[in-house]
Length: 71
Image 1 (cartoon, rainbow, N blue to C red):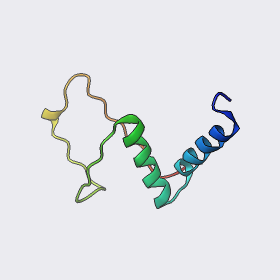
Image 2: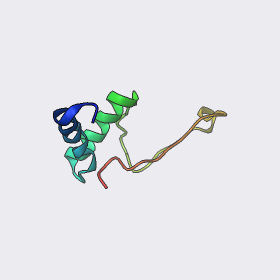
Image 3: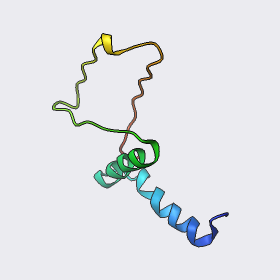
Image 4: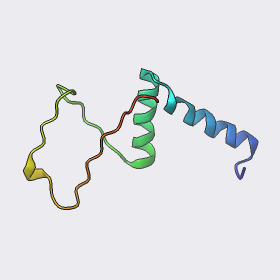
C-alpha cells in the first residue's frame, strides 16, 4: 500500500459510490469520468433516442455505450 492505510481507505471511499445503483452513483460515475478521463457530457432532450449524422463519423471514430448507473 504505497499510500498507507489512511490513503487506501480514502481511495476506497472515493471509489465506493461508483458501484451504487442510484442517482448518487450515477453522479459519482459522471464526476469521475469528467475529472479523471476528461470526458464531457451533453444533456439531450430525448435521452432514449440518439440521432447520429453519418457525416460526423470518420475513420478512427470510437463509439462506446456504457451504463453509468451502478452494477
